[in-house]
Length: 330
Ligand code: UT7
Image 1 (tube, helix red, strand yellow):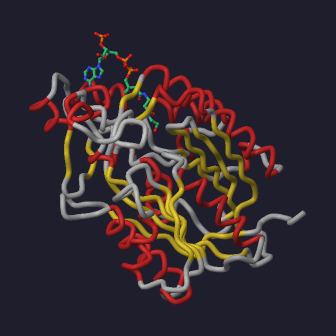
Image 2 (cartoon, helix red, strand yellow):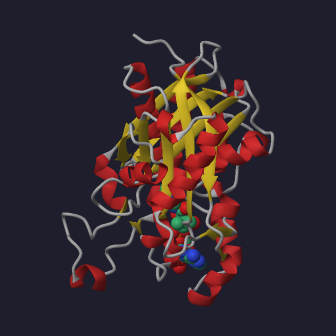
Image 3 (cartoon, rainbow, N blue to C red):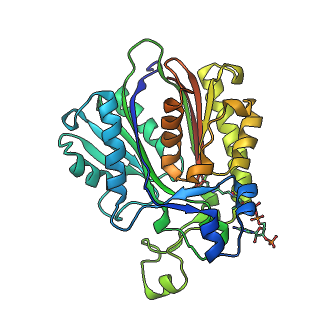
């Protein structure tokens, strides 16, 4: 059996669209209020990509940043593993468009469909590629244009989501103890109808009926999803800590998927991590699904909250249901 850490983070990059949608903007189109949104979700604003910006373009910007920081060029990339719930097209993978944009000609490129934990799932795949010798330099990406599957007439979901991308160059660990110390990934497909996009796929291909029913957009049973998020993220924190052989007291920063401030607070409380050791930027970006963890990591590094040697607990939950966690020595 391979001993950990197998893989380490060598560079991060992000892409955030310029356009901002504030809570006040929603007050003009929906029966909602800034106060309700802040109190129930912690979200103040989210960024929305324009029509001409594709998911692959957001991913390209994030990937270029990560590659520059890691000091590698497109010719060095062996694998592009892109988590997304909003691929540019159903066929082919958005990762292949990203490969073409980067000119990473020798890479294998494919998407990972795991919703919000898509970055963690992709990190797990990268670890496997590195452990098996299939790849050395992996681009692990989370990129979303959730605005394209959000129903802006539904106040219970419209206010939650934003667009962004985050990327990391993941390389073999160097034997200094830094890297991914543990990982835990889990799914429960029985709960899929609580958060899904009913129309537009092979089950119910796009049609006038799909458009009339607005079933090409995300549907969510908010309260049930909330409870499941708290339960599964708590389990994921426990698993990652146990597998790494560390305790909550050892964690320098908890970096959770940014879904809702109340979910973050409940997760931190269960894990036994005080809120001053929790990365929170849901107020600025809303829920950006698979981009959320790399976006939070990048900001924490920029703010000096993550330094070389910091011990991090990453955790995420999303549609599927899917959830996962990792302990990382930065
Ligand atoms: O990445 C993982 C994916 N998703 C999530 O993590 C989301 C998980 N769920 C949530 O974050 C929360 O459930 C929501 C923020 C979506 C909703 O908050 P809640 O406290 O669970 O509210 P609720 O669904 O229980 O609804 C309470 C009330 C309802 O009104 P009535 O039936 O009590 O009259 C809703 O219609 O709040 C109403 N409501 C709103 N009111 C003003 C729902 N959305 C809004 C809104 N503005 N935007």
